[in-house]
Length: 232
Image (cartoon, rainbow, N blue to C red; front, side):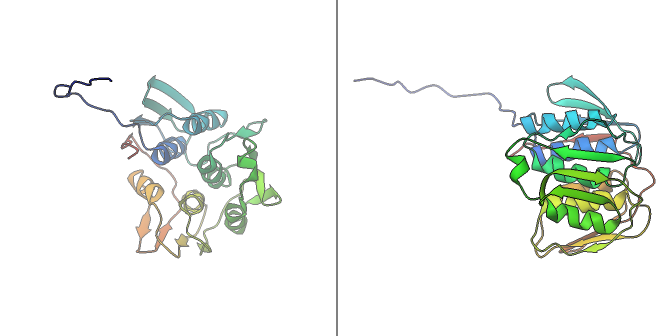
């Protein structure tokens, strides 16, 4: 028989790791901004580490000032460099889909791939609207690797068949980097709004309605600081 004595009062605090979805977006949006973006509360994970590696491969400087503090020096809306090697998105579907929207508006040809699990996931719902905007997008039977040849994009009105924050985000990122035209995503149901909130904070022209969001092309974006909330 084991006797367990009651403990005294507990005191202290717990730091909840940063939200993974917002951490991805903070680095990706910072990469297309001018100047530095200080990211506080960055959520460390294998997926978000892949995002850091991906933007570095595109020529973006990311200084890791603390375990949860990054300083991202962006290259502007159209200043990313196409690497010779494929960009490894590991197991991060968010990274692959959002990055596809960004590189669709850059010069050059980009190959986005990932691990075995990621290469089994569908990407046609991202490829189709980006192709309509003017990018050349190829997939392996609707799955990664995703080959994207960037172009001067034009805005579209897109009605995704199913709600997806990742697809919406990819199209909105492409829209804010487009050369002309309004881009509108009208979803059957509302999804998380992290991307449009962050683009608006960076100076993007964003118009939000109950089940749709529109963006205008931006010549420049600036996002001095992002405080990532806890991943509750």
